[in-house]
Image (tube, rainbow, N blue to C red):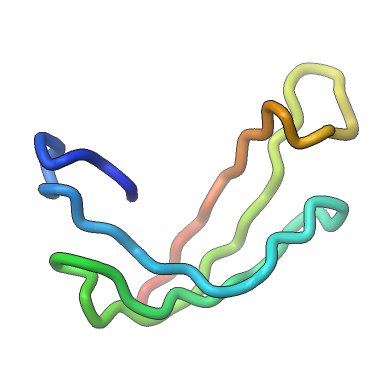
Length: 72
């Protein structure tokens, strides 16, 4: 979603609003616009924290997030 200008979508971005709670298995945040073809985007995103290997907690230093985006 945050790609450079040489990317296939020319750097189009989405704007998110909300708080991802890392202790919860899944958080939901709002999509409130963006740039380029997503200028008036609306929807939500379900975010999950992916834990590497057998780790069950994260200190936030190396955290991988999975975004499932739903636009309306």
